[in-house]
Image 1 (cartoon, rainbow, N blue to C red):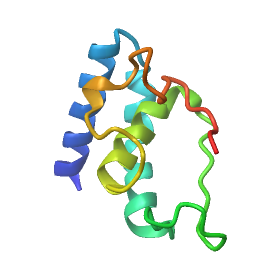
Image 2 (cartoon, rainbow, N blue to C red):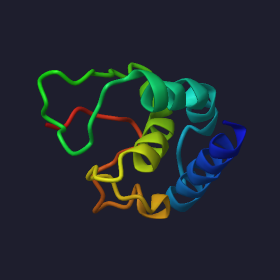
Image 3 (spheres, rainbow, N blue to C red):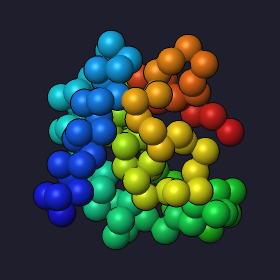
Image 4 (cartoon, helix red, strand yellow):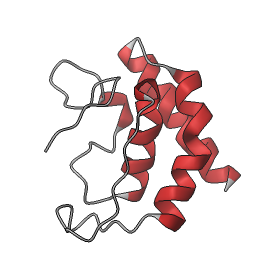
Length: 103
């Protein structure tokens, strides 16, 4: 697991640097928990995002959203999140520093 966590941390650092903002410590602090949830525990099929039987995850620590974005980009290849983290946070992007619910 440390190898993937290092990759995700680099992604978070690149994203934050490119955006000129971001809560790096908050994102790093929940990264291992998020990875285990999305890799081993949650039942989520990225190809069926509206499946009524899917598990749901609510992130109340909004300042850690860069960690969530990094994990989703790595795990959910079919998700609508741009997997190129260096592009997150431009005015035209839909992934703000603080996660918001979008349906």
